[in-house]
Length: 162
Image 1 (cartoon, one colour):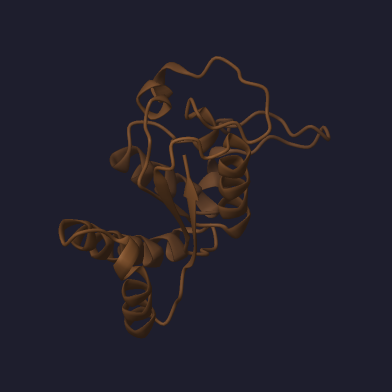
Image 2 (cartoon, helix red, strand yellow):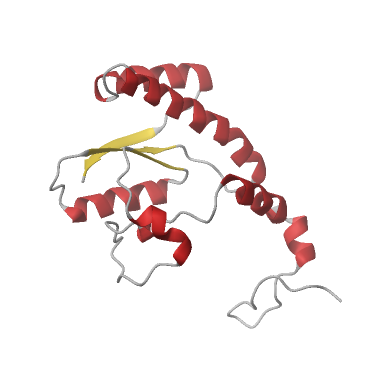
């Protein structure tokens, strides 16, 4: 007997099973995620974020995320990057607090995630050092150029405002 760990597909097909999750490498990725964060963090649950959807009561685990204003957001998929920028444009930028939105495009699998995580950490550490030195705004191009020279990847970026 196989343990079913996902609901049946909408088309009436078979459920995904524990064995298929193991074969696809999803279980190790979920186990890693459980060690890294308390719960999934979803931009649209941020109390200021809308992404064009009707607001629903957020799950209890998202309460900390709901009240945050971020200085930097790192997306790992261009579609998500664009949705964040679209959402920020809808908000109107009333306070003029800058938000740096970065995208490191990554395929959604354990191998690529393992490669991208240290890259994102390196980029965030460079930005943090720039903040300590007076602000990332004046140093952003230099930081991104240095990142590209070392890692052979240039992140997409945009500055938006709350």
